[in-house]
Image 1 (tube, rainbow, N blue to C red):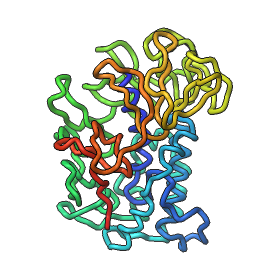
Image 2: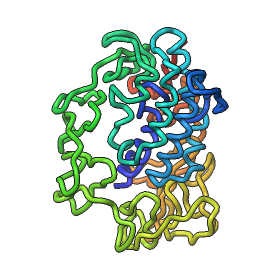
Image 3: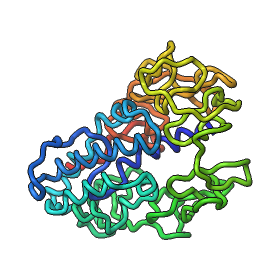
Image 4: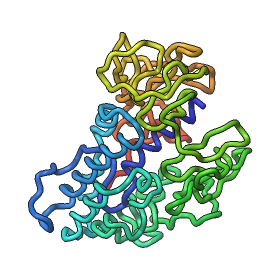
Length: 365
């Protein structure tokens, strides 16, 4: 459950970076600022910067994540600069007359819209504002380069990647391919193979080897009989089961019961071990704080007093697989350094599984 929480949360942040092929995603870094002229005169970087700011704020609200955490995680993102390169090189086409419609679509989207991937639909307003021009099989550096409905496959650290059609429902996604909007890649119970499965609605069976829930729902219940339900904002709870923006004081990551209560913001007074702070922050010394390099991360405490800290900067050197649930936020590693996972590598780089070394991010020249 501890590893699942991290994966779920980071996937939510990742949605900021991939929810649109056309009008941006990722953090605010690399943007051209938000001071744009009248509709039709914005540059692609200005459009991207505004969309990124809207998406970041909305995802923080929709996922119940501390805005300070989102800002720290996305501070060094280069999405907007890379998008500008794509347009300049002709791998993507920018239509300034449709930029405002893209921005407005983000502003007006609901949390369920974002979770259900409507921003990534081939005919979305943002995919019309910035449309990928590279056909399937062509070279790409990001999903922005590829025609709507496709993704940039950089599996096995190939650079550049290849534009590839997203996998249809029931298609094989075992190698990490992207599934069509409205579905998720689900591995079988043995973890040996995966296929794209439609996300399911309220009261439908769900789980890691069954299906993901549609936006606004979470998979709840006992193992083997879990169903998609609206997460609660009151009543009895376990750690991580309350609705976004709510905490479960009294329940620790290692067990126990609590009551769903509005989460406390970064900077608010808190009681250590009570899990009162907003996701992305932890109670340290009586105050909700985000974890930076040198701070404790992973599971802090034990039993019903066990809190969970994610690193807003760097990476956490915990190792749950080996029974090491506590760690310290470490600086990101340079190209060529030894690594155990891509989260350890700086600059958007990845960890080569064959060499165990950090390799540079695949960015456009």
